Image (spheres, one colour):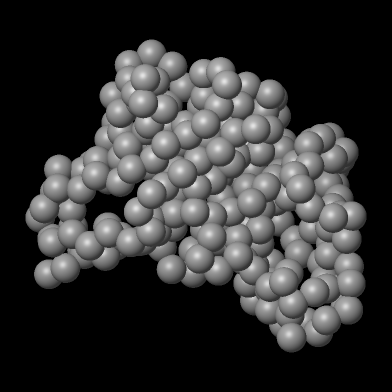
Length: 114
Length: 113
């Protein structure tokens, strides 16, 4: 049973560029959430996707956008990259509408912006 | 808004000794509470969760946590730590509205031989 998979594992970009990160949820899950984890901090909620729509959003600017595909996989896009966007980006999957459904996390994509 | 405080940034424990990691939360209603562990370069693994019922919950790897509503706390415990327990530990809370998880800043656990 495959867990949550993310690609790529590492990425280096330059300020002002755009980046796309990808995530495949755990088998049987229909909801994907994205988190940003800066160095030495806890993960921060970016947004959640279900049925190909953004359902909830944390306190992140519009430069952060996403997409969910019919097979439940998801992409996170960040435009106009800033140095402060350097972080570990974690994808988590779950079952929609069940707050008590534990999130299953991938190993993350380490983004470095230079 | 919900929030989580983990007062200890670093904790050092000798192998075989007991462990308690503190977590305090702020949430208006009954929260759903979680403890996750993160090894270097890895994602987060769920240790245990509390939704309702028995306030003492058992998790994986010999961990347990106790929910104390009067203290707004959900402390993580283990009677005897192993060197492999060295990692970052995160407490998290989510409300009934299925918002995203709110995490604390984490506690870095160091195990001394």
